Image 1 (cartoon, helix red, strand yellow):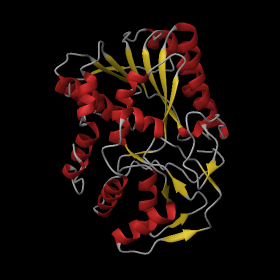
Image 2 (cartoon, rainbow, N blue to C red):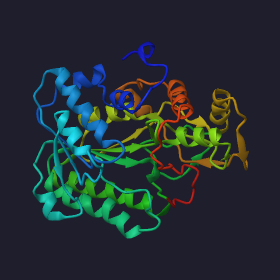
Image 3 (tube, rainbow, N blue to C red):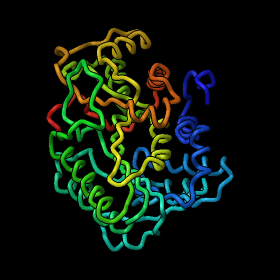
Length: 347
């Protein structure tokens, strides 16, 4: 889809889901290279359903017959039925149960989205179990596969707020137990890559946005509600979730042993104050601010991703316009704030 053909606004969740899962020409070209089926582990979260559908649609458009299997506990009513209706196989599985993991089909291409963030401060034991223990059982089950391991920019430390952000060459320096558990997830998959021939990409995503959640959404909703914007973290990253889905699928081609880290986000960081003022103009209301811009922020530099997988389809300015129109018309929120303004690692 060219930029000119992108809609000016997204009317409802049906159109939103269609755009999130609509494959690009690059996705379709990549699907033609798939020599085996695709497993989406942790398919019941924020990104899983649209990613599974994008893989299914890319394969269909490419004219290749590949199984797309979505695995989750499927606690959301109707989700599994909806995926099956779209041609995706579903398997209900609690990944914390090694016996259930051992019964999963062994497919050669794995998109690993399983993990825990929200509420991690209240149950750190559960966070560590999801983020560090589950990968052991998955790593054993999928030795030798290609695995795109969803990770987070939180494995890095804070960068100078004026910088372009962390790169793949930078040392990890996670702050807080959530971030530490995410680095543990990476290290487990690194072990299986080095010792058992598994190939992987460590998909270090900085804040996907789908209109119902994300950094831009958090800022926009505060402006719309007349709530103060905390400027302590003065710059943020964001990327349209559809573009993150596209990169995740095509990152299978980049899997390597040892694993290849990949910083995934929009082309440049966005100033929180400037974003709030932009939304203030779109909502015709003056934003309120609290504090001053701090010296550091969690930022990522996606230069390597962009060089390997190309620019995102949706420019950040169009994404800002979509978010503003969505909120102005009363579009639904997932009520899962990113908490990007936290610098202590507590989520």
